[in-house]
Length: 175
Image 1 (cartoon, helix red, strand yellow):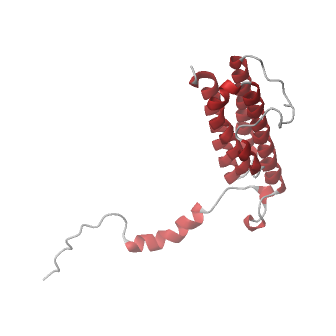
Image 2 (tube, helix red, strand yellow; image 1 turned 180 degrees about the vertical axis):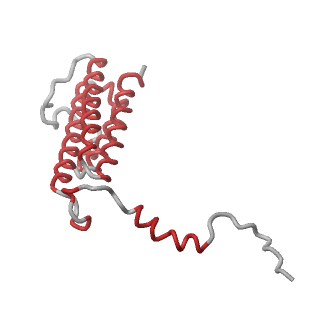
Image 3 (spheres, one colour; image 1 turned 90 degrees about the vertical axis):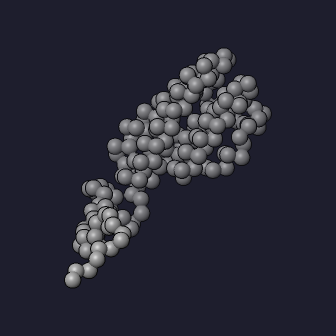
């Protein structure tokens, strides 16, 4: 007499299938593609990757300085710009930049060094200048992600997308 079937219906692959296919799937999932200048993954980031991260951090820090300059020149925009500035600080930190900037979320014009770029006198023009800086940086990061390895490329893509969202918020979001 045959055994009765189990009251539970089995769903998904059987254990034997997983044991047979598992190691191959894990090996394939770990493959990253041919990045010749990266070397052994245990060696850490390559010199090119370190330079790309440092540049991305400097770019984000420069963007924070632009936000600081606009907030100092146009205090009425501070409430609108503070969240975008905080994101730029987080981006700089993600790339390994100076994290100490977050403490000065509302910079005072007397303590800040003179801005590297002039801030337009009109609120609308100041927002347009910030949007242009965000757009240029997002475009540059989108191009740069083709030349960097996987994890940094994903981070650059994510930050470039955030920059594109900032452009929208600076130009259309307040309308």
